[in-house]
Each structure stands twice: as C-alpha cells, then as structure tokens.
Length: 195
Image (tube, rainbow, N blue to C red; front, side, top):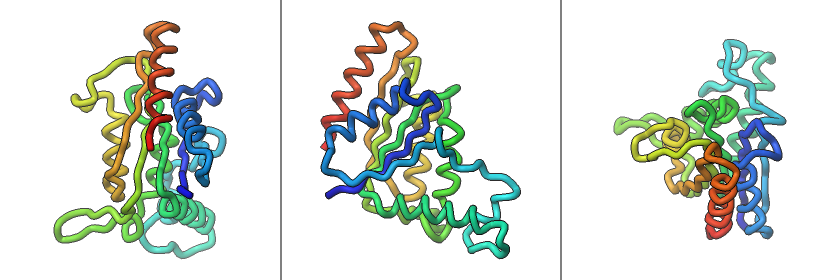
C-alpha cells in the first residue's frame, strides 16, 4: 500500500481548485494510506526570531524551543514516511502561499533533509515522488520561470532530494466560468490518471 502525504495550502477551502485536484488524485487511489496537512486550517508558524533556533541543525537548548523542534520533527517524519508527496499549489501574487513556504522552512533541515558536501548541497529525501497540483488565474509559459510559484516549489523539493516531480496545472481561472470549468475538468482527469 502506498503512503501519500498531502500538503494543502489554499486559503479558499472548499472553493479551492488545487484542493479539488488533490481530491481527484486521492479518489483515484482509494487503497493508499493518506496523511494530510492543511496549512490553511492548521498553519505552520512562520519562522521568527522566537522559532529560528528551534529549527536549526542542532537540537536547541532551552524548553522554549521544544514545541518548535517537535513540530519540525513531526513534519520531517511525515515526509520521510511518504512514498508520494502531493502538494496543492495555488498561485498567489505570482508565488506560493506563505503558509507553504513556512512548511518548507520547517522541512529543510541541514543534516537531516539535506547536507552540504564538497560538491555542493545534497538532498537526503530520496526515492520519493512529488505531484504538484497547481491552480492559477492566468495562463503562463512555465519555461520562462514566471510566475515564480512553480520553479520555487520544484527548487525546494529538489534541494531536499525530491527530483521525481509531476506537475498538473489548472489555469485560466480568470478567463470566465466556461474556461475555468474546462481547465478544472481537464486537470482533474490528468491528475486522476497518474499511476
């Protein structure tokens, strides 16, 4: 049985297109064991001076960082336990939601999910597949690197070692209800068909 880690980051709840794509993927994989993180209803705290020491390489000293470190340990354990990581990626102002960036800030730990070597950084999260369920209002040429949400997300995944990445995109949501419905239906069919 495959293990799926779902990361939902949309702030629009049931109206979210990226969440609808995730749901289509999960419906096509009913036998899977699923762990979900909804960063809208249960956000990971943003990194601050009060939390930074808790998410560093070494376990921090002081009880004030214990909760931060425990959360980071739990998030990292979910990543390592998963076979497939499904990330909902709504594009907000050309980038990923800040809640998703905060999740990555906690997951990227030197010495645990990546390490620095003489040849450069090496991701330590190996043998995982990621599926990015992207939703965006406009239509863009992803080869241009704009908007930044997708290359940023793929770059962070690659940095920790997840290089087998499939992207399914529903775009053109702002082009009217008919165009949006067609884009959503096509993306749902595409993501549901992923083996």
